[in-house]
Image (cartoon, rainbow, N blue to C red):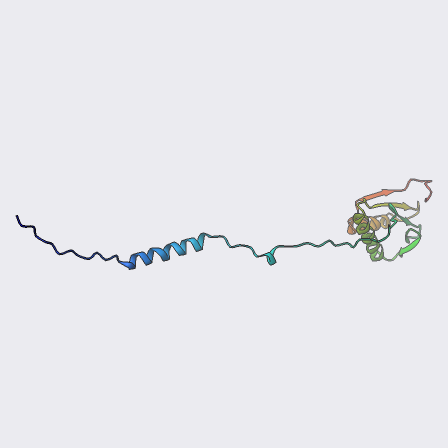
Length: 148
């Protein structure tokens, strides 16, 4: 018996579909990968207060006096006249006091010492100034209580 020889065909691998699959996989991994956050984009918060070299004695509370005529006095310093309803000097001073108290990890306290003849609207004006300065520790002085 005679064996017939067959012509062997050379098998070629087609590169087109393989290249398509490689590009599809490349696109898939590029889309699903999360980008790495560079160090320059990381948020950094610096402290807002400076360190004190020497100890700073801050009074525990501020005493606001309201006189009979409507004048407002903060620790013996006049900060509001009877015609001034907004009390901007008082608000600015109370904001600085609150920030200093919070820097020293203390609660800001305000005592209101109103004269018996002081108008009630003036007491409300002082309470509004304390609210604008974000001070919640507000008390009223008792009758007959003397200043320290």
